[in-house]
Image 1 (cartoon, one colour):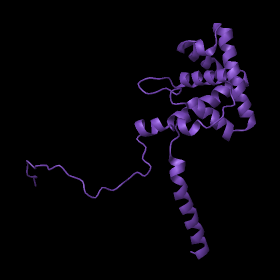
Image 2 (cartoon, helix red, strand yellow):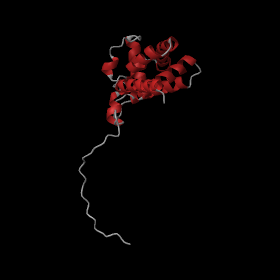
Image 3 (cartoon, one colour):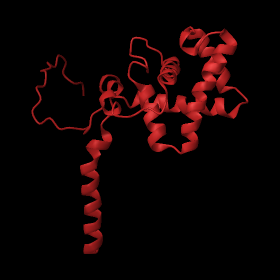
Image 4 (tube, one colour):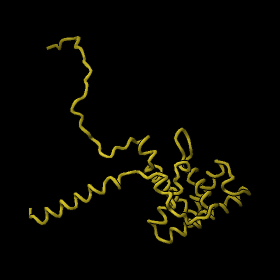
Length: 182
């Protein structure tokens, strides 16, 4: 192996090791709060109820409680093209319009069953905006929920560096009651 290639490989490895802890940490509400939402307050509330409908609260916190709607907005604003950002804004409006037409009330006032029914309609809709919005938000909701600090620390038992070595571990004594047969 040539010395330059070896040095280049070592530099990449060291850079990766330095950036690994930052990359591997789960996000939490505090890391997302510095973000200025492109949505209005009402649209933010609708998006919060959409993500809560996708992952509702059970014996674990729901997506809304973990702030996944803020994660969705930040991801769309920082990582997606402007067309996706428009689709998010438009999709929130479509969601509320569908709730008004179907149930004569805003999406945030609908029951959990009504919200689920509306989102199912959106997922099967012929309207590309509605279907695209639901697909985008569903994917980001699942990603945001599964990568949240709560899930990473309490459910999946994430370890930054797995496979540790315990050199001194107490071992329970075990008595042998039978002699092995030959």
